[in-house]
Image 1 (spheres, helix red, strand yellow):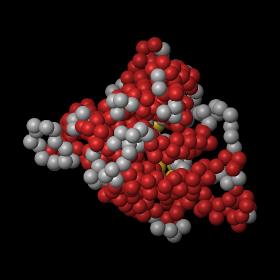
Image 2 (cartoon, rainbow, N blue to C red; image 1 turned 135 degrees about the vertical axis):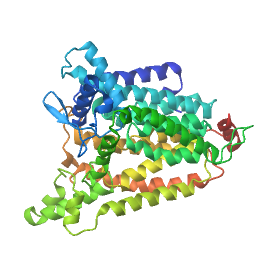
Image 3 (cartoon, rainbow, N blue to C red; image 1 turned 180 degrees about the horizontal axis):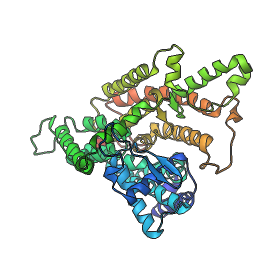
Image 4 (spheres, helix red, strand yellow; image 1 turned 30 degrees about the vertical axis):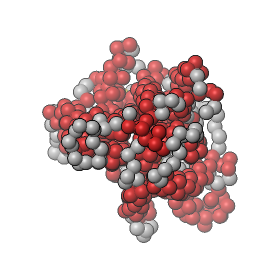
Length: 468
């Protein structure tokens, strides 16, 4: 490995560098999502989180929350609201009156940054257990996440809170690979009730537990997944109890149902549907401005699914879902015998990637769960380091072209710098990487004898280290 990752002092220095960059970015305004999170933090600090969805009503109430001249409803699960409420309570204790300042922006962003720091520890510990005699690889996994340009942008600069669900989701897979079914199930419950995208880790956790049995235990292959399911249900029940107790259960379901009503092909994600958005918008403009101007103009807004239907095309939602599920099913068929953490993490990354590339309504920040999973695989299986860094660059550039370092912050780079909209170029490149990723994935998951590190350790040695 490269020298920066080989010593404890260098590792600590690089961790402090990443922390310093994050602290410097915390006061930046972020995206429009940060304003929504501020409103939720204020509402949670001023009232009861369990009532933020609304309580009962005919028709069901969809409560509107107001703060500093802005208003919004709630469409996240309750764990995210609990966490934002805690940030709001801490902020109001220091700044009475809850002023809308850069300090509030920093307080809201500090939550996902703390989760990112937790992920560093989780990645280092998990890889160190896999390869106890290769500490440099363990440090590499943590730094590959912590100093990643995509993660530096996502939480600290732009203010997305995805790391709040990514931490328990990755923890659930690591726990499942270590045959800790109760912990895995509990973490799944926390992750899914933080943000719905955590559901993509659930089948991989199930696969990790399937067929595993601790020495001296008599649980069948179905036992650990069942135990994890019970643990997830119990955890979910505890977390949802306050909402149910005030009579807001149906209001919660109504709020979460809004995810299925987002009327867009791609929410600025560099995927198949952003390419389709570019083609269809340009084709519509050709008659007025000509071919060159139409196809070289930046894509100004997502294309609505309802617009496509109105134009007489089939609803793309069904075909997109079928394509995504087919890609995921193929991955699970290839990886049905896999039980080691590196390749389970790789399979988890593929599930998220298939969702990101093929499903509709995907937003630009929904890639985040891929990165720590791929960091585990890339630390242990050398061939995955190049895809890891290429994907990190694509995601980071896509975020930067849309938002810079936040609204009105950072040097503006025009998306027309590449001729065709740069985000479309990134989407086309990402489609190529997706195909390449899939071709490599199939062979890696099928293989019964492959080298997991750049050293000369054999498969038997690695299997022994996994089982410890």
